[in-house]
Image (cartoon, rainbow, N blue to C red; front, top):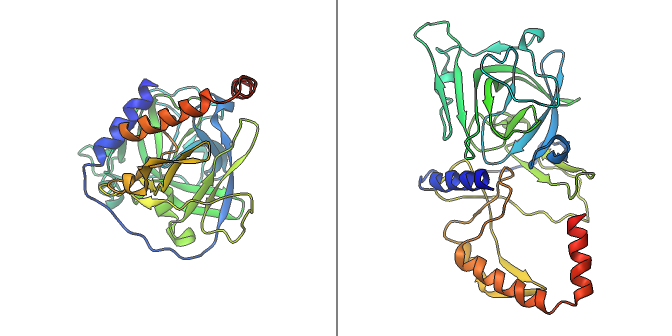
Amino acid sequence: MNLDNERVKYIQSRLSKNLGRENTVKDLDSTTLPAESGSLIGSANYVVVVGLGTPKRDLSLVFDTGSDLTWTQCEPCAGSCYKQQDAIFDPSKSSSYTNITCTSSLCTQLTSDGIKSECSSSTDASCIYDAKYGDNSTSVGFLSQERLTITATDIVDDFLFGCGQDNEGLFNGSAGLMGLGRHPISIVQQTSSNYNKIFSYCLPATSSSLGHLTFGASAATNASLIYTPLSTISGDNSFYGLDIVSISVGGTKLPAVSSSTFSAGGSIIDSGTVITRLAPTVYAALRSAFRRVWRSTPLPTRLAYLTRVMI
């Protein structure tokens, strides 16, 4: 919980910047990946499996709407590597792997919030990325290009990613991170010619169920799903927001909480933050309404609910 709180403070600090951006959208191709609960590998986040390299190596990555760089742990782990479920990616065994040099414009354009590039004076030196996250987790390694296999029919050549050599933090069993932010380094931006910067996801309800991460505007719809569009957060060009209309408890809308309450800054949706947070006035109204409903709920119903939650 403390680390989750630090991540939220980091997100809030970035909102002081005024870097908003509008994107146009149109229907193009789409592809879908199964999304699983990270609890299966010891993580509180959600993961998808993609292939990296030639021949490809399947890797379980946490998908994160609150960051930009996609990276995985790489041999020889010159600094340190945490324990992960998949075998650590070995770039020496891939025929499509290349390092980005310090003199490349790809290196100088890397810097964004939370990510910086470092180089030595040597003209042929590799570009080093240094990523730091809101919960104080870090990844340092080589900025590289590789073949990314999203599905059997969706392959991205020369995909920019981080080949992590020194990785520390609560990544818990995953092979790394998939950055879904708006920065040019993110997978959303790098695949814009295929999916036009469009993505959606549905989180699995339990550790035994499946959700999905979809790139592109899928023509297929599911009558049981309700889609909520993501919006631009004022003050930051990387995060995604939700336009909250109202909050209801027990089927009754809270009179003190309406869409105008969230109009100033919107609400960030972040797949990498575990705990939902509200402004103090909104939380107070929600808490009071919940207490009233809970106290009026028959005891057997309360016990049945608590039993389901514990299971």
